Image (tube, rainbow, N blue to C red):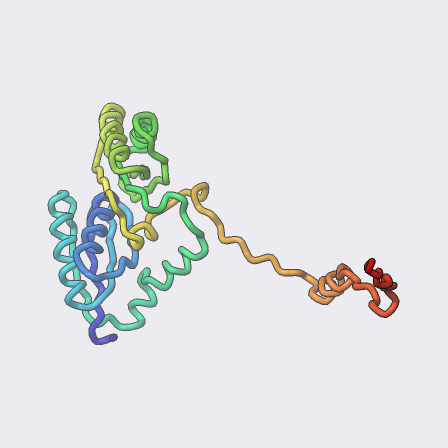
Length: 243
């Protein structure tokens, strides 16, 4: 119901922190992750939607996690938002259309590792170390301003943990490590909002239909086997049996 719905917003200054915050919000209450809003200088906001009580619980839990990371900027709950507000903000309808256009990711249902650096060279070096240290796949990377870059890898939880640790050492050697995050069991809502490189996306193939249905029907008729005329068949006389 419109009178019972609400929007919840939690803001951080780190992409791994906002993904971890969103993960906690989804797992703590019955809310839907609308998406992220990145406004530059490292500021990221996770937006959830649901019943007022669920949104309130999700925002409190998410803000607590963000505060533990030392990255909490702000939190807000918008009860009974006006339809015009939801049409302009990145609400679920827009994200659903985006997801349907993108297709299905081959990296679904794998643990997620995020490593954020300040500076692109440190991120690339960390990504290389992560790929060489464990059986993980490079999913994508995210840039949120203020020099902050996040590399995202996918794989089994143990492999992702090993990869993130190796990436941390390499990032610190090259430049500045800013934040890390490992999410063992990501929910579908969280996966739908994360960036995925096009090489991992399987496009939906349209069903091929015959162009000329009449011509196809004619060809099928011509291929039918003709049965012999029973009236023109010669029936052998019955052989008399010996007494």
